[in-house]
Image (cartoon, rainbow, N blue to C red; front, top):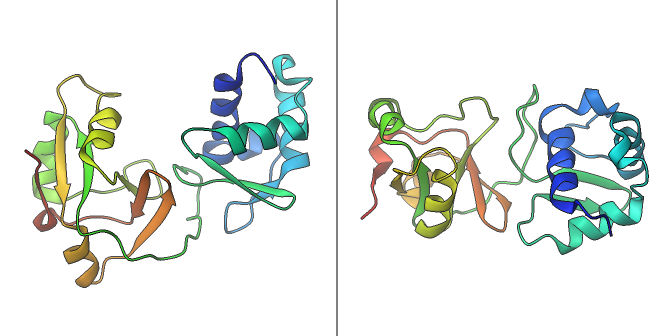
Length: 183
């Protein structure tokens, strides 16, 4: 396996989530691209990836602790995090009663008024537990506000939720009335 698998995983995420055109990829409406085209795009994008094989991509995807990508047959896609134009379709699912979201104190001030919105992404990302939300929030600030999301109540009032992976739930937005600071 390649020495820098973490960097390769980040590069694949960049290609599949944010900049498929830079890698010569054309996504379908569900976010799928050909694995062979991805490998070709990696080869052409950077000399570091000139020896990456389809098997490397398959192994990296299958062995990842945090599932960011999935493979189906000859296709691969990112499970969440897209900022590309047009929303990638996901299958709607019943959320757990409570989900969580880690944010900064400054962002919490505006979230209290406006609710959670996707910002530069296609969906709002939510975590299944407080610890994961805290870890996600720590990427932006050491002072994290973990929000409790009354997901089941939001769902019951008509908001759709989607499974984004093992540790990510997605939704279009969460109104402020379904949010509170987690203790």
